[in-house]
Length: 386
Image (cartoon, rainbow, N blue to C red):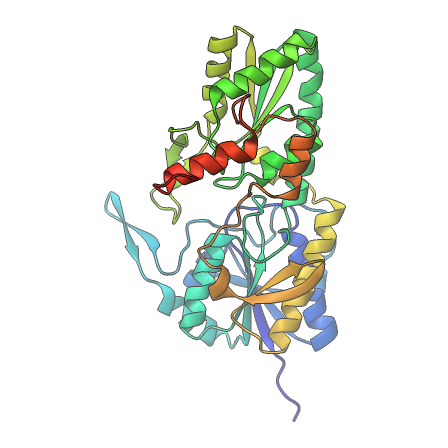
């Protein structure tokens, strides 16, 4: 008798983004074509593993999904196996369902699980690895904030969508001589604001990593007007905040592992600019628009490479690792090295340097360089002189 076929599971966790279906497609095709493996798809992320909701996936099931946004398996950003919300009466209690997830995995006779997700999914995956589950991670997020990989799939597609929106906003900004504030997602990381701001021809970019000086922002607007440029485009990451201020929280979802939902900072910026410059401002919040639509060509290729690399790791029994793109080459890192960490924009990032060379305002005062201003802030926050 020949060896029984290996069976691997796959799930998509956290917020959706373009490229998820491309990864699923690549996993199914590589698993079947290269190794003759069977593939089980869990529905709605780790919730499917906890509640034993799954389906078998064949090449036929992934036919035609490459260009489709979202995820054919569904997803959830509330299904932490170690802190799973269960409604009891009128309130939720949080229970450890990791052992239940492990039992379901073993009952299905699976040899590996490929978990596609962001920092929350990877943190949960690292916890399950410590309980003995053979897991391989695939990095996904439009925020591009996962440690260890050059880029996550979904990011490029979101940048394309944001850039197209900023392009369209330019025309009405010019026509009405207004300041237009465009708010993008990204949570605590400014990658999306930075890249979309540069690609879309923004004039001011405000990111969570660098608290902005409102007087510096207003000076940048006034200087443009003085040069005959009667409009300005301000691109704001949802986690941006003024010096000495707090991030704007739009709501809190108590059943989510990350309960805070940011959003609305653009209205605060608009009110501040309008009040200090007497120039009319308008706000556009792109929100979940950035998560939708077809993946870009770059993300389709990257997602496909990630999916195939994940299958190879599973076949080699190299578990507890996250597939990463390192200097253009597929590699992997232990999940424990990336779980719970965020990759943030730094002062010396090449695209930050690009923005400064273009003369963009990144939130620093007019009379202080970007580098000096944030070095001084960092020194004060550390309780010392820089």
